[in-house]
Picture 1 (tube, rainbow, N blue to C red):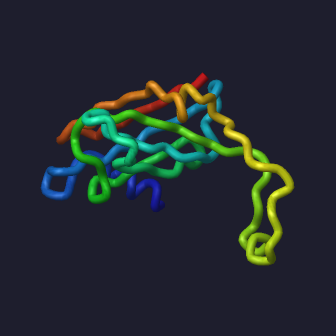
Picture 2 (picture 1 turned 90 degrees about the vertical axis):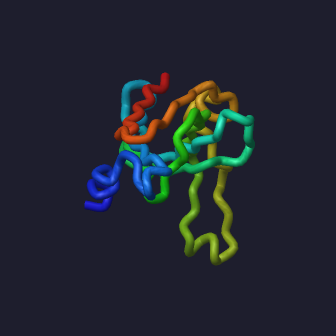
Length: 131
């Protein structure tokens, strides 16, 4: 239900100043089970993200009321696999057996060339098919 509400809230809101964005992310033809997507302004070059969202079951969404300003963005996509630790184990001072490993190739995160342009008055549906 929550995801449906977020998707319906797509487009631009907040007095027409911010844009919502939603889409799908697949890796090697399969929806990315979970991960993160981050949007960085491209002009001027910035190391500070403008916004981001969790990817769950291949889908992500940022509602217009928490959206991004219209413009061009560099996009990074990341998904860690491997060792994870429960909150209870973490609180008990335990650590994962092995460090998590990046599941998504560097060309989509640390060396990303992915870009997107968000526009006012549009649904801003963006899909990423990663190889």
